[in-house]
Length: 426
Image (tube, rainbow, N blue to C red; front, side):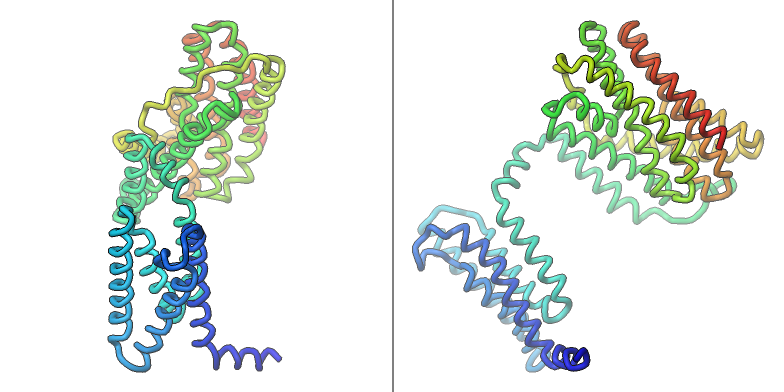
């Protein structure tokens, strides 16, 4: 039975592919017909029948190109373009609508039909569905564009620049002392950090504080837990009656650092994950649970201002500085590791953690791929994270007030001690 079915498919492959071309044209035509469904017959330039036939024509053009002449595809494509232009011109004379979306959709439908026969029908159908979705979500797309701010568009373009343009151009080879420097790997880590910050920024940008302080703090922690700590500490100094709410936000944001660390580890070196997961999860839980308890006891007052969003969600000079910081830490780690052994790694982790935990975390995770002992990498990451949160506790007390410092400092100290203990026992 299977052999008969396979023979049927083989002998009728062209017919099936042409049927797919007709179907994908109907998918796009259905959306276009629905959009102009209230117009009278004859007033619509193209609907489901026209688009279905254009898709079929694209498939037939490939068959004719194979069997008759290589000019079939370009001639028929130009014919479709000419018909679309004529229809658009006639419509423009009646209705002052300068949108050429339907005309572009018709040309794409022809190309999708050709793609279904010449290359892969699955790719052609997927492209058709995506096209139909884009056409159907006109208002949503326009609303998104109108809501986008200039510096956010700039940030998105810069993220594309550093990821799809710069990253592939960098050499992927070991350089420097001990071969610890790989330009592409270093820049890839920069892209990963920038992408996580970008997601955190827009999560708050889209939803804001409508979901409450827990949501705001959670995603602000993806962007910058230090920035949120400073913001909430300043607010606590001005509004001491909301100390508990601001302390909750700081603890949640600082706790977000630990899931981020596990993500870095899972992406760069999964072998490190079993050893790192327990101390990191313990530290996260010992921040999240007290934060939830404080929030539950004081949830009748949760009106706090969100962190300011006027900064650029992706600053290219900052990305370059972070790349330089990563390079410096990798070189220092190699030097101190050779000189002082694991003690040098721990010392570097503690110093680096004062300012930034991401760079040292990424560096140690990557070095665990190249000979650094797993237990040394785990303990170094935990030391850096603990040091970083200890600094934030000091910010809460100094920039904020004593009560905020105590509410934040207690869980931070407990998290620090427990994380170090679990890492040491492992």
